[in-house]
Image (cartoon, rainbow, N blue to C red):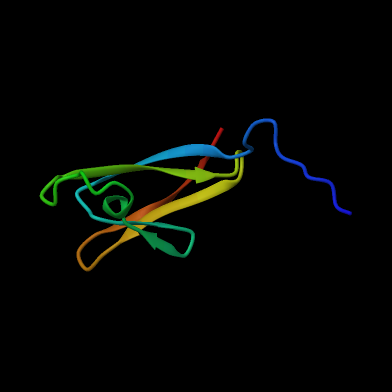
Length: 79
C-alpha cells in the first residue's frame, strides 16, 4: 500500500562541539553534556568534545551559564 523509501545519503550533518572549562553547554533551551556522548573523556579534563547530528544549515544557538560564568550565545550552522 505504501512504498518503501530511503535517503540516498543522510540529510544530517555532524557538529563537533568542544566545551572548555565546563562540563555542559546549551543548545537553544536544552542543556547537553559532551561527557554523556563520549564517556572516554577524563572527568578532570579542561575541555570536552563530542559529535552531534543536526540538520544542515539549521541555526544552532550555543551558550553556557553556570553559577560563576555566563557565555554570550553564539550562532552556528552545520554544513
